[in-house]
Length: 506
Image 1 (cartoon, rainbow, N blue to C red):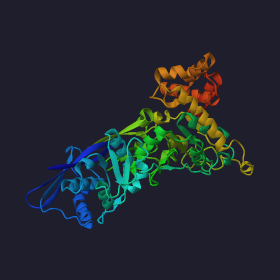
Image 2: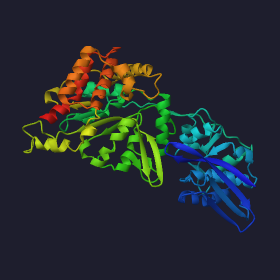
Image 3: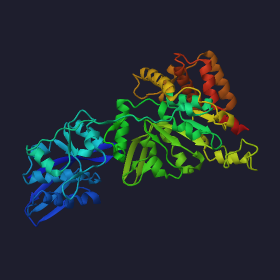
Image 4: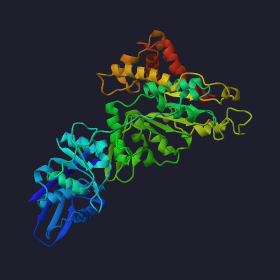
């Protein structure tokens, strides 16, 4: 007779249900695992054998065959240990078969029977809820998985505890959802001296999720500004937190065992490979652009990134997702992020300072920023010059609005957008609006439209740039709490668009 347990195999953020079938039949004693397992899954039989021995459970002197169905789906990871052990214990009549079949299980077994934490508990809980089953996982993963309230989550610390639960000796108390408190960043926007235009652009970027490029000499405050962006962003909504945490669960980043409402802030180094940024490697794991989903991707020293890596950003910026295609995997990950980039104006960094610039000015600036292709540059909604701060300004007391004040305005603008797009699930913020929806929400008044047409003709704006200016103008109007997009909103949006264009024309 065949006993069954259930677990999952991961394809991107999707967890596909896997049936673990165990048959104990007469024949030469042996233990085999079939169904396209990888090395970690094949070795599970030895961990299961040792864990059962630690519980004084001897395997029968028969042929034990474990099949992982569907057999054509690749099985990777050590989380198959626990479901294989459950199916085997049910096959030898130690655990009731009907109870084991009502659970999705995952967990790695140590040789003494302890359950070790594994990746992907949150997506597994989603699949368990969809199939009307409970989830059995290591105790360390329970708080993470219990956030999916539609299913019961049982967190066990050892195989012995699992056996006692199924035999009715000591039922496991369901895990409670944990949530990581939003930390206090301790970095206030008011600490940045000067750079009022850059602060304003940062506020607009946060309010409408508009991509932003900062160009300035070393030490002008570009990285300092970017580091204060998380302090003005609103916390993740419940749906956004679930989306983001599913990706982070697969990457093993939910180390505190709960769901965080803080938006991701990813800062990869410029030496990062294409697989690290976009995703790939063994199992086509998520890259930085997916780990930054619903958050911020900050690329400092943008021209120093490999050109091939930068070009791969173009498609995810437009579509909000990325398909990692490999010989043995074809995985889609969400990647709707806010891109903030910083760069020096040239290789030496002092092109705008006649006393410190090198002898190759202005050719050095054209060569250096020329590493960023035109199509990628066209996708930045806000382009800001960050000039050096005068020494006299550094000694002045802090001025301007605090991060809390800016965050309040950003939250108000985001609330207006949430109400606006309540009946449009394809859009969450102004940066998502396109086509007819964009025309409905961002068509400016007659004066603003005439201004935008003149700018588009004079500076040769592309159709993409034209629509991006409209989106930024809509966000500026939201910050101004204006129901209509007027000429001043368009003028400010255009001013952020033309900064680098004017430099290039010189």
